[in-house]
Length: 330
Image (cartoon, rainbow, N blue to C red; front, side, top):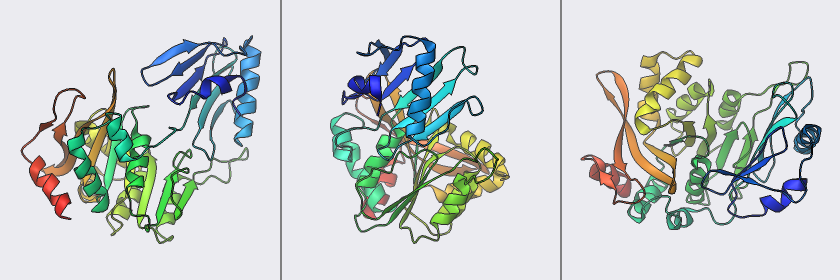
């Protein structure tokens, strides 16, 4: 499928590939982008552009002068984003996100030092106790990887319905899993199906867990209403740079959906039981904070209960013991 990039993509440690308009290729093996040299080089910007168009076409995504930005994904979890000239100076800019290969359960992630062994029991208890979990972090921090591992820890008898803008969770190893994908409007501006509409649809599909691959817009209102209507055990991811910054991000998304900060606060504090924050550090990807939601003087706060830098022992706040015991008992 990846043609001249296929040899590079075979490396099991590879997470991302980027191609710039001049034909240079960059790869991320977990520690940042480095330049690599494919066996078949891109010899001109026109070749890069043609490659981008064909790659998107394979995934059912249009990329041409009338639609110069393409965002596509495959059933295996591969994600391609491409922008062609004149949006970029020449050729095309291509970003390819590869699905994590090999085992991706909690045990495997713990072995890879994503989180300390002492947190394993709490993470499993959150899943088994049907806590509603918000996974936060920056781009490429490992949010989807952690989300998949949490889903692998769910009871196999549970029915999971996931909603995504680009399909990344479709490959989780479950029989009773329905993967819903948003759809963009066609060239006539019709036929769009947004994340919010799909979140509403999940509630009519007898879900045990509703999963939102990434919360980035007005769908936050539908998700919060679903989680407040008795649908516990759901999970979602959100871009944020720390646990403390989550309320500001949620408030901004809530305003897009017409929710006042006060309404957003009332919905969010009851919707989510835990926040797991992942970071991409120079030592690798880590869960650096575990927190929860509180309302103080009418303001929504997310407070870190545990912190970890990936090297020293974790640091715990006073309420951590109560938090951990609550879910262990559930």
